[in-house]
Length: 64
Image 1 (tube, rainbow, N blue to C red):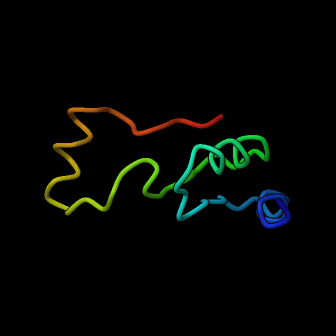
Image 2 (image 1 turned 30 degrees about the horizontal axis):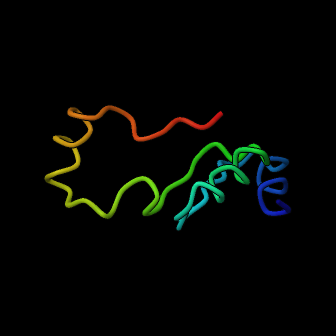
C-alpha cells in the first residue's frame, strides 16, 4: 500500500508484477493500483504470439 501511494503521489505509473491470485487483484484494486501483470492473467507469451492472442481475446483485464 505504501509503495502504491508513494508512486501515485510522485505521479508515476505503478505496476504490480507477479500477481498470481484473485485476492492479490482485490487488494491492488482496493488500493487504486490500476496496472497489474502476472500468471493470474496469463503465462508468458512469445512476442510473435501476443498480437494473435490479444486480437482473439481483447484486453486481459481492466482494473479501476
